[in-house]
Image (cartoon, rainbow, N blue to C red; front, side, top):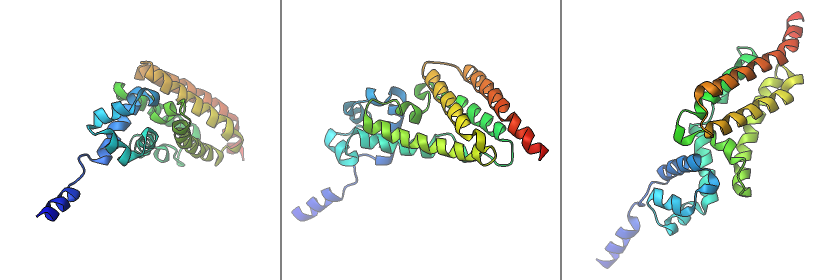
Length: 205
Protein backbone atom coordinates (compact mmCIF):
# COMPACT_ATOMS: atom_id res chain seq x y z
CA UNK A 1 0.00 0.00 0.00
CA UNK A 2 2.80 2.41 0.84
CA UNK A 3 4.44 1.71 -2.50
CA UNK A 4 1.19 2.28 -4.33
CA UNK A 5 0.61 5.62 -2.63
CA UNK A 6 4.12 6.82 -3.33
CA UNK A 7 3.89 5.87 -6.98
CA UNK A 8 0.55 7.64 -7.14
CA UNK A 9 2.12 10.86 -5.89
CA UNK A 10 4.90 10.66 -8.44
CA UNK A 11 2.42 10.03 -11.22
CA UNK A 12 0.20 13.03 -10.48
CA UNK A 13 0.09 15.66 -13.23
CA UNK A 14 1.92 18.93 -12.71
CA UNK A 15 -0.10 21.57 -10.94
CA UNK A 16 0.20 23.96 -13.87
CA UNK A 17 0.32 23.81 -17.64
CA UNK A 18 3.75 25.04 -18.83
CA UNK A 19 2.41 26.22 -22.19
CA UNK A 20 -0.37 28.20 -20.55
CA UNK A 21 2.20 29.55 -18.12
CA UNK A 22 4.34 30.79 -21.04
CA UNK A 23 1.27 32.47 -22.56
CA UNK A 24 0.54 34.25 -19.28
CA UNK A 25 4.18 35.28 -18.90
CA UNK A 26 4.21 36.59 -22.46
CA UNK A 27 1.36 38.95 -21.65
CA UNK A 28 3.08 40.02 -18.44
CA UNK A 29 6.41 40.78 -20.14
CA UNK A 30 4.59 42.59 -22.95
CA UNK A 31 2.55 44.73 -20.58
CA UNK A 32 5.33 45.72 -18.17
CA UNK A 33 8.62 45.16 -19.99
CA UNK A 34 11.30 42.66 -19.02
CA UNK A 35 12.94 44.70 -16.25
CA UNK A 36 9.69 45.45 -14.47
CA UNK A 37 8.73 41.81 -14.13
CA UNK A 38 10.20 39.93 -11.16
CA UNK A 39 10.21 36.23 -10.46
CA UNK A 40 7.79 36.97 -7.62
CA UNK A 41 5.44 38.64 -10.11
CA UNK A 42 5.61 35.62 -12.39
CA UNK A 43 5.02 33.04 -9.67
CA UNK A 44 2.07 35.04 -8.36
CA UNK A 45 0.46 35.31 -11.79
CA UNK A 46 1.10 31.64 -12.57
CA UNK A 47 0.08 30.47 -9.13
CA UNK A 48 3.21 28.38 -8.58
CA UNK A 49 6.00 28.31 -6.05
CA UNK A 50 9.52 29.60 -6.82
CA UNK A 51 10.97 26.03 -6.80
CA UNK A 52 8.36 24.96 -9.36
CA UNK A 53 9.17 28.02 -11.46
CA UNK A 54 12.92 27.34 -11.49
CA UNK A 55 12.36 23.63 -12.18
CA UNK A 56 10.19 24.45 -15.19
CA UNK A 57 12.01 27.44 -16.72
CA UNK A 58 15.49 27.68 -15.18
CA UNK A 59 15.30 31.42 -14.55
CA UNK A 60 13.47 34.56 -15.66
CA UNK A 61 15.61 34.77 -18.79
CA UNK A 62 14.66 31.23 -19.77
CA UNK A 63 10.97 32.01 -19.41
CA UNK A 64 11.43 35.22 -21.40
CA UNK A 65 13.01 33.33 -24.29
CA UNK A 66 10.08 30.95 -24.36
CA UNK A 67 7.68 33.90 -24.25
CA UNK A 68 9.51 35.44 -27.23
CA UNK A 69 9.29 32.15 -29.13
CA UNK A 70 5.55 32.01 -28.52
CA UNK A 71 5.08 35.67 -29.47
CA UNK A 72 6.89 35.22 -32.76
CA UNK A 73 4.85 32.09 -33.53
CA UNK A 74 1.44 33.52 -32.62
CA UNK A 75 1.40 37.32 -32.46
CA UNK A 76 4.21 38.79 -34.54
CA UNK A 77 3.72 40.48 -37.91
CA UNK A 78 3.28 37.79 -40.62
CA UNK A 79 6.13 38.84 -42.90
CA UNK A 80 5.71 36.01 -45.47
CA UNK A 81 2.07 36.99 -46.00
CA UNK A 82 2.79 40.71 -46.38
CA UNK A 83 6.01 40.67 -48.39
CA UNK A 84 4.41 39.35 -51.55
CA UNK A 85 6.15 38.89 -54.85
CA UNK A 86 3.02 39.52 -56.90
CA UNK A 87 2.88 43.25 -56.12
CA UNK A 88 5.33 46.18 -56.03
CA UNK A 89 7.85 46.25 -53.20
CA UNK A 90 6.59 49.66 -52.07
CA UNK A 91 3.04 48.31 -51.76
CA UNK A 92 4.20 45.36 -49.67
CA UNK A 93 6.25 47.57 -47.37
CA UNK A 94 3.26 49.90 -47.00
CA UNK A 95 1.12 46.92 -46.00
CA UNK A 96 3.80 45.85 -43.53
CA UNK A 97 3.90 49.26 -41.85
CA UNK A 98 0.13 49.55 -41.66
CA UNK A 99 -0.17 46.06 -40.21
CA UNK A 100 2.41 47.02 -37.58
CA UNK A 101 0.55 50.23 -36.75
CA UNK A 102 -2.71 48.36 -36.14
CA UNK A 103 -1.11 45.44 -34.34
CA UNK A 104 0.86 47.64 -31.93
CA UNK A 105 -2.32 49.19 -30.52
CA UNK A 106 -4.71 46.25 -30.87
CA UNK A 107 -4.62 45.64 -27.12
CA UNK A 108 -3.82 48.67 -24.91
CA UNK A 109 -2.57 46.30 -22.18
CA UNK A 110 0.16 44.92 -24.44
CA UNK A 111 0.96 47.85 -26.71
CA UNK A 112 3.95 47.90 -29.02
CA UNK A 113 6.08 44.97 -30.15
CA UNK A 114 7.43 42.56 -27.54
CA UNK A 115 10.54 41.87 -29.65
CA UNK A 116 11.35 45.51 -30.43
CA UNK A 117 10.87 46.59 -26.83
CA UNK A 118 13.01 43.66 -25.74
CA UNK A 119 15.93 44.91 -27.82
CA UNK A 120 16.16 47.80 -25.34
CA UNK A 121 16.51 45.56 -22.27
CA UNK A 122 19.31 46.31 -19.86
CA UNK A 123 19.74 42.59 -19.20
CA UNK A 124 22.27 41.31 -21.80
CA UNK A 125 20.75 37.82 -22.06
CA UNK A 126 17.21 39.11 -22.60
CA UNK A 127 18.40 41.82 -24.99
CA UNK A 128 20.32 39.34 -27.14
CA UNK A 129 17.36 36.98 -27.28
CA UNK A 130 15.13 39.78 -28.60
CA UNK A 131 17.81 41.10 -30.95
CA UNK A 132 18.18 37.67 -32.54
CA UNK A 133 14.52 37.71 -33.59
CA UNK A 134 14.81 41.33 -34.69
CA UNK A 135 17.83 40.59 -36.88
CA UNK A 136 16.01 37.67 -38.46
CA UNK A 137 13.05 39.92 -39.33
CA UNK A 138 15.36 42.57 -40.79
CA UNK A 139 17.11 39.92 -42.88
CA UNK A 140 13.76 38.79 -44.28
CA UNK A 141 12.85 42.36 -45.26
CA UNK A 142 16.30 43.01 -46.71
CA UNK A 143 16.22 39.89 -48.88
CA UNK A 144 12.73 40.74 -50.10
CA UNK A 145 13.76 44.24 -51.20
CA UNK A 146 17.07 43.06 -52.66
CA UNK A 147 15.34 40.60 -54.96
CA UNK A 148 14.07 43.51 -57.06
CA UNK A 149 15.85 46.61 -55.78
CA UNK A 150 19.31 45.49 -54.66
CA UNK A 151 20.69 49.01 -54.61
CA UNK A 152 18.06 50.14 -52.10
CA UNK A 153 17.83 47.08 -49.87
CA UNK A 154 20.15 48.21 -47.10
CA UNK A 155 18.92 51.73 -46.57
CA UNK A 156 15.24 50.87 -46.97
CA UNK A 157 15.52 48.02 -44.49
CA UNK A 158 17.10 50.45 -42.01
CA UNK A 159 14.32 52.96 -42.69
CA UNK A 160 11.49 50.45 -42.25
CA UNK A 161 13.09 49.07 -39.08
CA UNK A 162 13.49 52.56 -37.63
CA UNK A 163 9.88 53.50 -38.39
CA UNK A 164 8.60 50.30 -36.80
CA UNK A 165 10.71 50.81 -33.68
CA UNK A 166 9.40 54.35 -33.38
CA UNK A 167 5.80 53.26 -33.80
CA UNK A 168 6.26 50.56 -31.17
CA UNK A 169 7.62 53.09 -28.69
CA UNK A 170 4.82 55.56 -29.43
CA UNK A 171 2.20 52.84 -29.04
CA UNK A 172 3.50 52.21 -25.53
CA UNK A 173 3.21 55.93 -24.86
CA UNK A 174 -0.48 55.77 -25.72
CA UNK A 175 -0.61 56.82 -29.38
CA UNK A 176 -3.79 55.83 -31.20
CA UNK A 177 -4.18 53.65 -34.28
CA UNK A 178 -4.98 56.74 -36.35
CA UNK A 179 -1.75 58.43 -35.27
CA UNK A 180 0.37 55.40 -36.03
CA UNK A 181 -1.37 54.80 -39.35
CA UNK A 182 -0.66 58.40 -40.34
CA UNK A 183 3.02 57.80 -39.62
CA UNK A 184 2.97 54.54 -41.55
CA UNK A 185 1.41 56.20 -44.58
CA UNK A 186 3.86 59.09 -44.62
CA UNK A 187 6.69 56.57 -44.39
CA UNK A 188 5.14 54.63 -47.28
CA UNK A 189 5.18 57.74 -49.45
CA UNK A 190 8.89 58.14 -48.71
CA UNK A 191 9.50 54.50 -49.68
CA UNK A 192 7.61 54.95 -52.95
CA UNK A 193 9.70 58.00 -53.78
CA UNK A 194 12.91 56.18 -52.91
CA UNK A 195 12.05 53.30 -55.23
CA UNK A 196 10.63 55.40 -58.06
CA UNK A 197 13.89 55.90 -60.00
CA UNK A 198 14.64 52.16 -59.95
CA UNK A 199 11.06 51.27 -60.82
CA UNK A 200 11.16 53.61 -63.80
CA UNK A 201 14.50 52.18 -64.87
CA UNK A 202 13.09 48.64 -64.71
CA UNK A 203 10.10 49.69 -66.80
CA UNK A 204 12.34 51.08 -69.52
CA UNK A 205 14.38 47.91 -69.86
